[in-house]
Length: 471
Image (cartoon, rainbow, N blue to C red; front, side, top):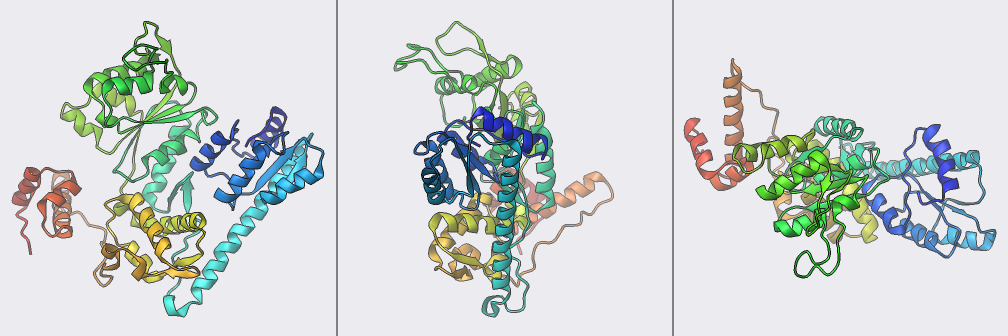
């Protein structure tokens, strides 16, 4: 919501206090679209006295980027012609002239959300009806390519119990001030999880900054996070605030935290303990109130055991630990994710794609996804690009590795662990996982070892221990 104090007060009174809605306020166009990119927003309220100013740009860009989100314009300009012009160009739901009453705003907001929900249900029902009568593609099989409603945590889409439990824990974590450690393979959505936590916390109206910690020398990373003063090093022509101070009152997301050096880990530990910020080249120690969310695609507990990551820093970071499962362990999420990505790609490209054919969807749901959710998103984007308007995504539109999946092969089933004791059950499960990984990669031990997070020697020992043989 971009608004002045009077509008914010009215909105808070009727939306937050009475209807338990969430209200996020923004002061600029850049901040507005930063929030819309991260948060699942239902409504945009834009208030500006200048009809030809930023409200015009915000509403027009919102119409292009988020066409299904209703938009309301609030203006102090008495000229109805100017208001009508902006409302028409931006396809806004309505415009209101200040001063407005809280009850008036409540009625308009409720009507806008009702119409938006009806439009959404109409689109879904229309597509389901179209898919159900297309015998050439679906024959007598019930359409499954639209699973609605699915669950979501901001931009995270899921239907699987694993993600449901994880997002429930993340919502609990968001309500606290405790640091959070997010672990998961590349492409699983760690940054989306961090942004979802921030925008569901008490810090949602304060800044969120992101810093990738991989591949930076210590002095550069120190400058990025802690800042520096003018002349601190050659080329420092001006002072730099640093993200820790820029995020004061908000959240900072440190990606690839596992890649920082042991020396820099000491500086991070000091900041987490005391909130101290000492810029490069300065004798002054400052303080900043920042919530830290860190992420790693490598298990930090293993790095701690190997002596590559400080144990005390690890325990400081993992106030809450969120382990995002890879997509191959929650393939039931694929149809919902594919539908979501299809809608987004269609809106961005301006293509009209009717849906995903059942045969193609089954193959998408059987792929292993080494690139996780990001791989699925790029696959759908590619399919939208090659498919024609007013058509379905068919098997021939899929990439070769997915299109060639044999649907007659038995799908992976839940594995029953054998054994009388815990040790025997763990060994039985380990043997099963190693065996399946070797079969999946046609006994290429290097690839199987990479998937399981083992070394070549490690997987060779497992093969020998369990007497596994290539069939």
